[in-house]
Amino acid sequence: MSRIIKIFLFLFISTLVLTWHLNSVRASAPVCSSTHYNCASGTPINGSETSTAWTWLCRNANNVDASCSEPKPQNQSPVGNLDPITCDIIGGWAFDPNTPGDSISVHIYDGGAGPGKLIAGVTANGDRPDVRSTYGISGNHGFTITTPANLKDGKNHSIYAYGIDSSGNPNYNSNLSSSPQNLNCSAPEGSIKITNNKERFSYCVFKDGVQTFCENRSKTFSGYPSGSSYSVKPSDQDGYTWAVSPSGSQTLSTGGVVSFDVVYTRKLSVASITCSPTSVSYGGSANVSWSSTNANSCTVSPTGWTGTSGSKSTGPLYSSQTYSLSCVNR
Image 1 (cartoon, rainbow, N blue to C red):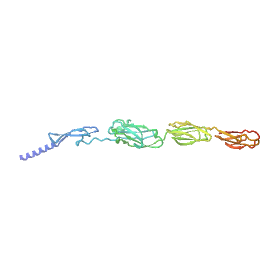
Image 2: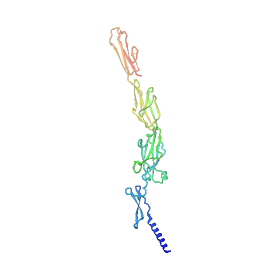
Image 3: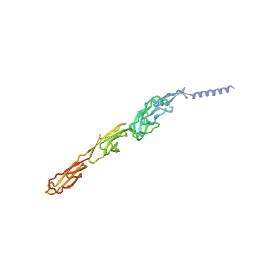
């Protein structure tokens, strides 16, 4: 009876010892920085390889080993949203999950990064309590810009907003939610005032070098896009010179007026009259010839011959005769 008991006790003790050797004690893992890993380090207790006291260390990527836990989350791209844009405001919010308390940069493009045009770079440091509450973060993360005037041209524009990663690595820059959005804004308007001293003659108005319309009246024309450059060219008219003041182009401001004076001036008439021959015998005749430039009508006196140019015979002459030419440019 006693022999059986001893064997039983021996087995019971052996089991306890074996169980004790398999235990391991680990301390709580520390909070490591975003560039380090949580790593466990074991030291044998009482020389037993199966009984180990564990401690934790923070190690960088150069000295990690198999005892390290999963690394902290790797770099994450910024998150945010492009709020509904208008012809007055472009805005939204953005933050970097790796540095949620900091304000990051946002780049706004017309047409997207690469093929498009950078409109503005802005820091997302505006107050957005809704973002802080939703994501449980601190700091300011809103951004807003005034819609640029050069986008207000009546054309479609695709507006993109990109969150710029705080690490400086462009591979982590992100296109924000709700980006892109279409923007189409009419240009603010202004007026063009034309004064024309000869309303029977026409002129043409040019916008940014392209002919827009032609008219002949002295009038103020409203409803034309501001921000553009306007100029005026009158039509050429025989017998007239023209001038526009100012002679160059003018840029129309929002709600403003650009004025042009169109002035036509008659060209100076030039007349010429000759007789051939200038001396004739009694009862002889001669040819009277005349011409003019910049003239609408001419009259030869005393005969009454008309025309801006011509040639006539005097017929028989029995006394000296004087011929004169009068021309006008109406």
